[in-house]
Length: 474
Image (cartoon, rainbow, N blue to C red):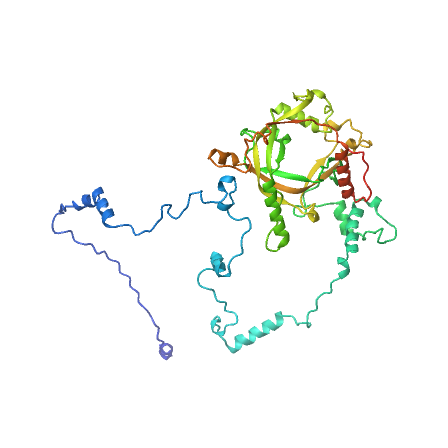
């Protein structure tokens, strides 16, 4: 008891929390429920058509609108619209520069609204920090330990300007050919006439001997094809054109129409269209910074197709140099007025150039088409001798042959016929008997001297030969 009495009294703070739950049930109403019948006859008055008619007459519409409600649909005042020229109702090809006063209207949605101020560099917008002597000292010591000492001003690594030398770039290109064909590598002295490739590194040799996919290392190459030019399949211009139809060119919808593979596009001479294109080219050459290049020359084309799939298949055999039956005279399916065997292609409709892009001469191989050729996998070339001197046999060697694409066009149906039916004249009328061709007879024959000369010049330019190529070609 004495020990307990000697202890000092401690005061303990206690809070008493009492939670009381109760229900506040309302007493029942003193009388029975009674429904009152309130008349609502006015609803029928306001919902009647007569009220809306009187409201329309008493409240005139405060809108000043013209007869076309601000949207002119009369084409009489549009210059050249009935002559096939729709430039007055279409957006201009050359977009004019934006007025500096209107640039604020083109801001994206993210920049609209109140501007967001950045707190960096503004003292009174800093985040609240609690400063004390202990925390400041500890923070400064931790920062000094984690931050390495600066060795001084960082110097820029010198750039080896000799790597940009054209001769050095050519040596690097020759190195790639030496890795692929070590037996043909040049080992003599390095001169401007005979350039020797750079020495390949072990990593480059390993990458060539054991190629790996840059993203999927588990993939392995199945076969290799050398990239080669197809010298025997050149055109008169030396390049190719890709044409894409905006709509289905035939009436066959449930499957692919194989007749399109041997279709014929015949350009139509239009002096007015060529004069307009020449004016655009002159405007671009006068001010190339402001006026873009108009692209390839626009043409209207007549599209021709064989009459049936059997005729299309025979024409494919006639054009295939690897087909053993290509010289069979029975492949022709029609005869012309002179009694010669021909392939007859009938006109489908007229197309106009919707969009056209062309490559300049400095970027001739910016876009190419590749065709893989392997005589071992082609059943039609089992009996062909690969080492023959015949040019038709030489092009069957294994390789990935490339073909330069200089122009890409989109073809859409010509609308002049529709405008003529509406009562307007067109610049070119599809129904003009003097210009319209209903059928085209095709005869597959060997090249003449003029065509051989053109292909020889193109092949000489591709190979870099200054001398004229031989006339013997196919």
